Length: 396
Image (tube, rainbow, N blue to C red):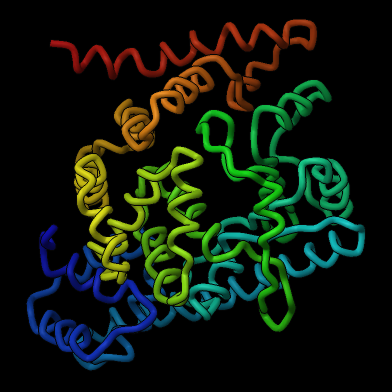
């Protein structure tokens, strides 16, 4: 897929932690053109790659960037680095608290991803929250520890609702009103609605120790993390370029990646197409190097190529353009999810969970406890009301 304009090409060339002489030369050539810097900043901010944009422009040819633009990027970079350091400190505090109370915890995304893949906390955009995986039996204990540190639940739940949350969902959000830090406590990688089921016992057995801000933390193995990042991207329709950067950087920093293990696990969980889509985007947009046999399989998948076209169309539309095909409120987002699955059984299961199982969004009705199960009836009705207008507009 060729770049649609110089601004997009410039952003893609800078959306990486390392550039070679060929890429640096191309960046210098692009900067001689009449660059729409407002558009560059807009899409870089939207896609979470402002730190990488500054990092590379400042290293390659800062004199070719208008001074007000470079100053703006530098100010953002410095402020972003400070915030990320504070968030990393809060994460380490919570991990140490969990460890002292006998809870094993794995941070992922956020500071952990910045440290293990990017090698620099400053190169990822501001961490909006801290994602921490614990074992399911430790969730309520971890919740109590978070409450002891001034956090409050993101949902006001009755005991019965909390029980359903633990059974049907995969995360429990918390927020600290004093330091404005949000924490998402996970016990699964995705919700039942997305119908992606990893063997969590094997996942826990493969965790590895890594360094984060001078301290040792547990992280997923590169093979597990690659699949998790690709599933996460597919779940959110790859609307953010920085998610693709994560896949590309993971591949770059792990030359001895066990590709057979990754693909076998993806095939066993029905997520091979989601994996291949992430690999295709990382290779096509950011030049990630795939082994020859893997690259051949990825590029030969016509369904993956069709999904990648949708992603590309969404990524670089201008802010004032009409909503794209993968807009969060679009019915096409649901179709994307279905097309990203290669097994019919997973598509059916996804639809069933989506239609029937209530979520905290449904609990906003605040039904009396005696009528809680009525949420299972209201859920399909609310979905009809949400998506019917979109379906009707598409009717002939």
